[in-house]
Image (cartoon, rainbow, N blue to C red):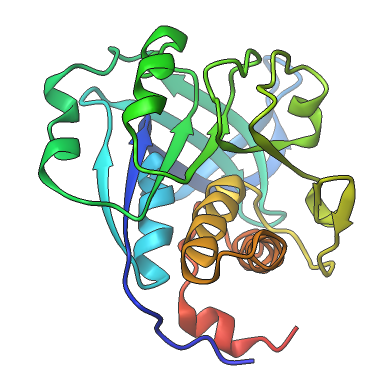
Length: 258
C-alpha cells in the first residue's frame, strides 16, 4: 500500500517542548569509585522533543501545524552505550515551565484548524483549571496525550495513554474516548486490541509522540478511528527502530508493506 500526499490540513499543537540531547560513547569498564559504568564520549547530538516532536511528525506526514508551547528550555540529556544502544543515564534540567498565557493563545484568533493535538507532559504549561476553559474554545476533534492522572478537564477529547498510565488515571469524562497503547502488542480501543507487528526496538523515546501525531493526521484525512490507530501503530513501529526521537515520513511508510 502506498501513502500518497493527501489533502493538507492545518492542526493546532499545544504542549510542552524540550531539547533532547544524546551523548553516545563506549562503556568498557566499571568505575573504581562506585559500581557504575564509565562512558567514554564519542558523539553528541540534539533533537527537539515532546510537543515539537509531535508537530514535526505531523509536518513530515504532509500536514501543516501551529505550535503553542513554553518559551523556557527543558533539557533532557541521555547517555547511551553505542554498542548496545542502551540508555545508562538521563539527566533533566529545568523540568518545570511557566503556565500558558493569554498572549500564547493569539493564534487561536487568527487561523482555522482541522483539529487540535494536546501534548501534555504535565510540566506546568497546562493546568487543569486552564484546560477546563481551553477545551471549550479549541478546534475539534481534540487529541490528547497527557501525563496527568486526573482526566476530568478533557471533556469530549480522544485521549491516548500508555498501559501503565491507564491503571493510575481517574475522573475520565463519559464523553471522551480512550486509546491505550500496549507497546509491542499494539493499542486497545473500545475493548478491542488492534495489534502491531513485532520489530527490533532501538529506542522508545518519542514513540508516543509519533503515535499521537499520526493518529491525528490519519483521522483528519479519513474519519475512521480504528484505521487511524492501525496507521499510528505502524508509524510508532518505524520510530522505535531509530535512535532518538524520529519523525516518520511518507517515504518511510512506502518502504514497508505491512
